[in-house]
Length: 99
Image (cartoon, rainbow, N blue to C red):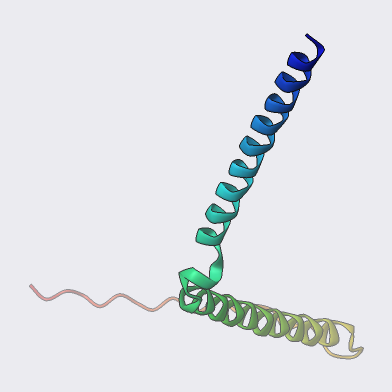
């Protein structure tokens, strides 16, 4: 009777091992299908180029904003220069409509 229990245990272990091996092989096949090398990198390269261009343009605009702030700060901190007042344009007389 002891031999039957050992035989059953060996069969159960072999079945579980076979099932785990099958699952692992299926997983490997799925991962091969998902790899970037098989899908082609042209779309990824194009997207990366667009992101790089956007980041560069944002950096240029931020630099322009910083230069403008430095210029205004310099103008406001210079002694002896009055701050220019905003001038209001004179009213233009309306033309009479012929009619």
